[in-house]
Length: 187
Image (cartoon, rainbow, N blue to C red):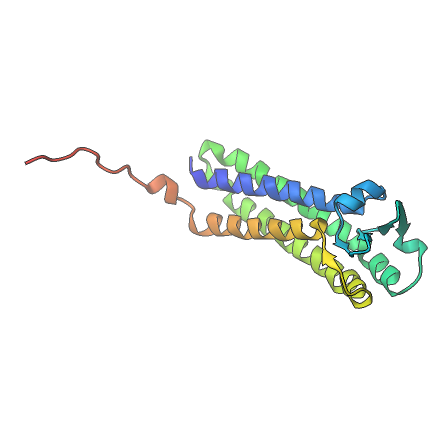
């Protein structure tokens, strides 16, 4: 059994955890949004997928008016759905990896497809949110920073790309390595 499968399982499990944490940015709970924002300001405004947490209260984008509210409300559902489906694909990648632990590489194509899907869906989700919502927030405030809810999916993308590279180029490297001859030949 190749150690590459273990690496792919590990990367996909970590990606799934990161995507789950990121999706919690859709929370309508103040403390959750304060700890897992998608963007923050120095004035302690915490922007999530469905609202902004300000002064121990959450204002939903659909209940407010203005460029930020309109832009963020427009992409909140699609971003959340994209990341949830990406999360399912990351879990599926791990599940396929577990089935491959017996040494059967027949599911390698399925693994590549699920890796590709969770990377693509995550890219689309963060690009959608960043292109509309973050753009308006950054245009309005000078001190905006990306939050952990935005950063973790980027790490998941990197892990997915590494998994795809391992799957594509490292298929049987670990199983083909032969141990070195440790016996010394003395004269």
